[in-house]
Structures are given as structure tokens and as C-alpha cells.
Image 1 (cartoon, chains in turn blue, brown):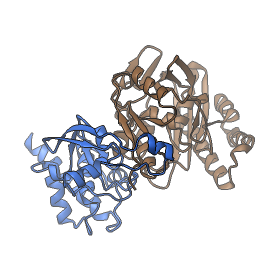
Image 2 (cartoon, helix red, strand yellow):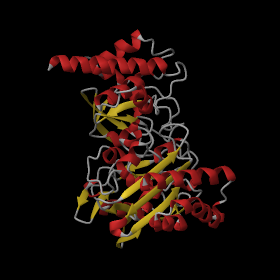
Image 3 (cartoon, helix red, strand yellow):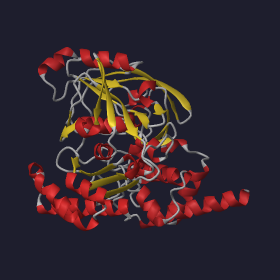
Image 4 (cartoon, one colour):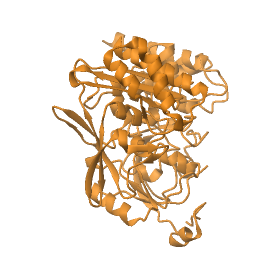
Length: 181
Length: 275
């Protein structure tokens, strides 16, 4: 694969007209995946273009909008700010990979019930971020939820229904946990 | 946008990383969490030819806790500090700072050493580490040297880090049980870069008082008069002292709005610390 040098000077282009591909092995939604990627490829583009996992969305591509949030080693991360090659030997989970996850199931239900999306572009990352807030017990009040969602931009809803849906899912899960004891 | 073409290498040791950096003749950038660097590459502000990935080097993720100080490896993440998964020398100040730094997804990957090495003027750690009188350990081809964080950052994205050096760790002296701190960050949305930021640390047992401003059009600004007034507990003179300090910092070219913001955050942080 030929990679031109972008804004770099001609000497640079000469020095590395062909950038080496980097071999990666990652665990993606539970399955082992191996690929050779150009180092400049972001995790987001790797997921979308090489694995056809288009539930990961790209908005700003500089870490502000949050639409590309996935889990890396179990923790939310911006897939636009991670190079695919830096994910070698890591676990990645995308919105396609949460089948049977009780927190995501609850959030999907309450997002539906409370009409917590309009265009849906921010929704996969909202779900992943909300799941993390609930698991870290940072979804106790509307204020706390809004604080935790500051890094995920929604340009349709005004957030009200999203916050309501997350609070409802958190309550449901707390009740479920209390009943189980 | 997409990042420009680049080569990538993940060395197995710090020595190897420094060797690669020294050989790269200024064409390499060290990448840890990449939360600023990859954004800058996506915007084509940074166009390195080679990325040297140090994020997983065990030397740089270690934490040492001795009687006097805690030494954080440069690649300790903001989230690890936020969650107090590692020893906290600052009696709650550093976890508080980390919890308001960008967003959780960024904090999970971004590192304290990366933040210091970049020294974005609006970032939290350069000012907070200056207020804590922390020392950075820098590692280069000829060995190690340590530098106070107060001297490390010299301007806007400017530091004393040599082109072939890597920030290895940050040593933070433990505050005493009597210590008090105040921290105020002003920004219009949770997690944004600061419009104004003040850190006050008072530790009577150590005889240490310092008032520092971040987001100050340059390196973190130590307010000498305000620090003295805080040490005397003379809150009535604080506003005047802060104004004097800001007047002396004419080279920062603060406009009136910024002067007000800086004064307000310094006052509020001092009140937090002394209340």
C-alpha cells in the first residue's frame, strides 16, 4: 500500500515513500483478529473500513465529540485517537459486541422508552459511555450523569431524554441487584 | 481528517526508546496515550515520520511509594490517578484534578507524563505539579537528570525536555496530614481546557505555601506575593497581592477579562485551602 507523505517535505517522501505495515493481533468483540495495518490507520477506520463494524461513528476526529467511543481493554476510549497498531494485543469491544450484556440491554430498553435519540448518530457511543457510568457508579443523579456525558455530543435531543433514560436504567439495575441479594 | 503517513515502533525498553529517538534526528515523536498527539496528527498540526510507542513500557507505568514521596511513572493514566488506584501523595488534590480533566475516555488513555511533556498552557498537570513542587525525571542518551516541574515548562508548548530525552517519572513529595489545598478550574463545559485555573497548596508542617495559575498564556505562573499572603493567612490582603503578581506578569499580556478570571480563581482556590 502506497502512502504519500502528506504535508511533509520532499526529502521525507523520498526517505519513506513506502511506510511499513504493522502486524496486529487484537481480540475484537470476543474473536481473535489479525491484520496488517498502515500505522496511521485509526482504530475507528480499522473497525469501520476493515471489519465493517459501522456502529462506531466518526464525528470530529479529534477527540471532542465522543461518537467513536469503544471499549479498549474494557475501558471507554476514543477510537479516532487510537492508532490501530497501538491496539496490538489489546481487547476491543464495539457496539456490535454487547449481545446479552445486562447493562446495555437495560439502556437499549430505556433509550427506546424515553425516546433518547433522534438521528441516532451519537447513540452507540452514548450507550457505551452510559454503561461505563453505571458500572463505575457515576449515574446516581442527573447532574452526575450530565457531567459524565460531557464528552459525548448530541446535536438533536438536548440531552434531557438521554439523561432520563440513563437514570432509569441505573435505577432498574440497582433494583435488580438489590432483589438478587 | 486522517493522520499523515508515519512509521511506528514499539520498543521493549526505555533504553531502546531513547536510542531510537536519538537516531531519528528530530523526525520521531514519542507517543504514550496519544490523546493530544493523534488529534494533532489528525489535524495535520503534527507530522512526525516515526512514532515511538512507550505506553506499555514497564519502567514508565511503575509507581514507587516511599516515606517522603510518590514517584509516578510517566505513563500513569489520568484515570488511574482519578480512581486512586495508585498512591496519592497529594491528599486528594491529584484525584480531584484528574476527575475534571477532559473526559473519561480520554483519561483512560492520556498520561501525566505526556501532559507535562506537551505542556499545553491550558492543561492541568503542569500547574498542579508546579504547585506541588514536583520533580520530573528526564532520561536521555547520556543518562538521567531531574528538574523541578516549575522549571520544566518554559512557555506555550515549550519545555526544557531535550529532543532526545523522554520524561521517565514524576516525583511528588507527600503532603503532611495538616496540608490543605484549593483547586479551581473555570471552563464553560465539564472537561474542556481551562479558561483559568488556580492551585493553592498550604502545608504548614513542611513550611510550604504556593499559589499557581494555569492557563496563563505561558508556563504556569507562580504568584509570589499571593503565596506569601497565604502563608501569613492574611486573606484581607490577598486580592491586592494577586493583582500585584498579575501586574508583574506584564509579559503574559492578559486582557481585562483574563485578569478578572485569574483573580477570581486564585481567590476561590485560596479560600478553599484556608477555610
